[in-house]
Structures are given as structure tokens and as C-alpha cells.
Image 1 (cartoon, rainbow, N blue to C red):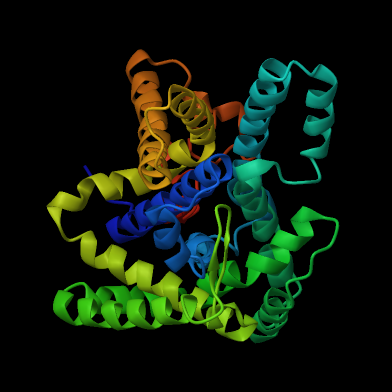
Image 2 (image 1 turned 120 degrees about the vertical axis):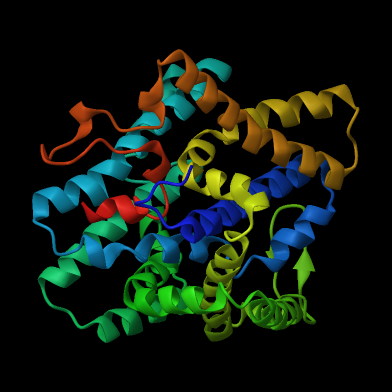
Amino acid sequence: MNSPMRMPWVDTAKGLSIILVVMMYAAYNTGEYTGGVGFLHYVIGFATPFRMPEFFLISGLFLSQVIDRPWRRYIDRRVVHYLYFYVLWAIISIGLKIGIFSRDPGGMLHDLAMAVVQPYGVLWFIYMLAVFGLAAKLLRQFRVPAWVVILIAAGLQMWAPRPDSYAVEQFAAYFVFFYVGFVMAPLVFRLVEWTQPRPMLAAAGLLLWAVVNGLLVYSPGYAMQPVGMQMGLAAWPPLHLTLAVAGAVALCVLGGVLSTFVSMEWLRWLGEHSLVVYVAFTIPMSLFRGAALASGLLTDTGVLSLAVLLVSIISPVVLYLIIQRVGFGMFLFERPAWAHIDNSAPQAAPSAALPAAAAQSSRT
């Protein structure tokens, strides 16, 4: 059942987002080892402008409800919350990959130390959410006008610097979307609320957006590769930024429409538990892809990518359901009481642990 403190369309949009994120890794990870390009490469190519910006924009939608809280409580919810999962899963991932599989304890210690200052692997998203939350609070504290922040952040995004620091690079690339979600939240909420009872009109608008986005991404100059792609006209920085915001809002509208269908409950549930998939999908992905390639049963890049995608999403969900049934191990997906710095903070639900930053539960 839906929690009365959550907005179903937000979780549905997050469900779409987590599928796209895992799809990208499934397609590119498979392509790296097969040297080929499959049909999922083209699907994820279409989503290239907005795939990650949408996650950050949704994460900023509820920031206005928490940003004026006292520092201690805000840091607990918007910084410590994410750092707990980042540290925990960085230790698990590095320990398995370097310490056990590669049997390199020295390398493991090195990677653990570097993970403090350089976001590790796919966990960079959680790391950056903590950084973005802190940056937004500081900007609010010093009363920097929102339009100034957006102009500077947009300039950084279009400049796309490539410094030695991966954290700085990702801050420049994505902070604008997080902050735009914060500023544009009332407009996004009204748009979704207006389109939900008008599915045909919403579908027409989404179709128009999809055609324009697809034509610009796959315009002359695009190049699809086993790992990554070069967009066509959509690669022009100002246009890329525009398509990113438009695509993020479009996925919110699509989430709003889909959330009205009972048959899409699974997608809403997946978005509500996006943390479960996000932090754990790379482990089954690597294991299954390696076993599939070794067996020789799946040789087509597209089919193998799809199989890897399904296994990578389903495996963490199965693990979560098992943990929920046996009653041990929930600390993997739910922040325990000892990891709070604010005693008034309620127990964090696993469903609110990633992207939309606790969605409606952040109101308390």
C-alpha cells in the first residue's frame, strides 16, 4: 500500500529513473566485454541528456520543506543520511572487488582511503547528494539569490570542467539540476497535478518531446559506441542543458500519468525502494555478466544486456525481501538509530533513502 505521506507519482518517476540508470550500466558494461552495440544502447542513448539530471532534479523537489530546519537536524537528514549509505556500501563494494576477488589488501586500503575524497564507482550519486545538500544549505544561509545560483551553476554545467577531482567534476555537471528542482518545485508539482487527469493531452506532449529529443540526440554527428555515445546537436552545451531539464520534467509528467494505473504499482514500488537497487545492483551485474559470457549461451550484445539489466534489478529486490522476512540485515538499506546525529529524527524508512530525499517523509 502507498504511504499517505508519499506522493505516488514521485516514486513512479524514480522507478523510471532507476531503470534507466541500471540500463546504462548494463548496456555499457556488456558492450565493454563483447565489443558490440545492442538495442539497449540506443534506448539509453535517447535518455542520455536527462538520465542522471532527472534523478537530481527529483532530489531537489522537496528541499524547500527541509532547508530552513536547524543545522543539526538538516545535516542529519540531508548529509549524514546519504553518507551512511555511501560509507557502508563503499566498504562492501571495495572489500568484495579488491579485498576478496582481487586479493589485494593494499589496494583495498588505498581505494577505501581515496573513497573519502573521490566518490567511488556508482556510489558517486549518493556522495554528491550529501555535497549538494550541504552546498544548498550554505547558499541559503548566506542569502545568495536563487537566480544567481542557477546562472553560475548553469555556466559550470555548460563549461563542463575536467579537473583532477571527480567530486568537483560531478558538482559542476549536476548541481544545477538539483537546485533547479528546488526552485522549480511548485511549477513541477502544478504541472504534474494538471496533466494527471488529462492523460491524452499529456501523452501528446510527451510524444512531441520524445520526437524532438530523439531527433536532436540522433542528429548528424552522433556516434554509438560499446561504451558511451557521442550525441548529435544535443551535445551543444546550451541545448544539452535545455534537453536535460525538459527530459527531467517530462519523466515527472510521465510518472504522474503512469501512477494513476494500478498495473504500474510495481514501478511505483521500485521507485520507493530505489536505494535497494542502486546500492547493490553492480554486484549481481558483474557476477551474472561474467558467468553468461563464460557459458557462451548469450552472445548477442542486446539480448545479454537485457538479461543483465533484469538480473541487476531483480537480485537486489530479492535480497531486500529475504532480509525483510528474516529480520536481519536491514541496516544495509535502512539507517539505524545509532547513525543519527539528531535525536528528534524519526527512523528512516528504506523507501525514502535515495533520490527524492525522503520525499514526503522529509516534512517531519
